[in-house]
Length: 227
Image (cartoon, rainbow, N blue to C red; front, side, top):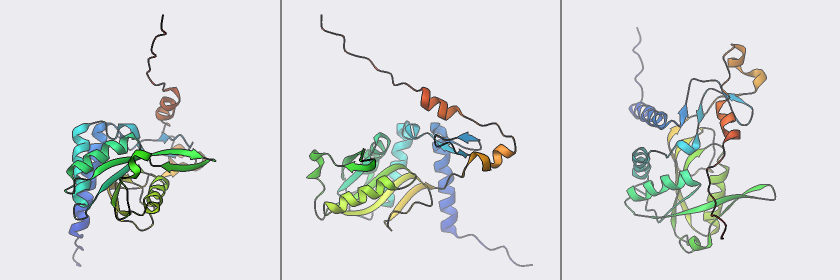
């Protein structure tokens, strides 16, 4: 009888670590699994991430940010750069835990002529100089388009991207060979409705997230008119 091949200890450790991070995301209410979910794109999937909830719990976010900072501790970092509110919260946690004590700046996302655009506010441009070492941080990375724009922006300013840290990355994302560290690396299986195996099995479709997205109205208050 042939002996059962032993698993690579490093791979086993990474697998265990990823399961722990998934459980943390479940506890925040951000990660939903083993479901039949309708996505905003119209496709169906078995897993879903509510991005706005990922960094809602401060103690979890601090711990996850510290893990990213520890991974990149061997690299000197001058600036941590991100976009979006969730990623910015995570960036502060990473910067606080990194031994270089880098500053935190953010870019703004938008559209120009129907194409994605990332801009760096004027106040921050003096902080990213030639020879600056920049660590990019994101919460969720689906296509990598925003991060690739950030990489181009940093290099345009003459600085160097030392790596990319994120909570969740789809395994198919290509970031031009830059060092990437993600706490969770996995792809959601997505299906067209007419080819969805869950539909064929008669599993009820969960439309909650799409309904909630369309029905959601931000709470707001307006300053009263002067008498």
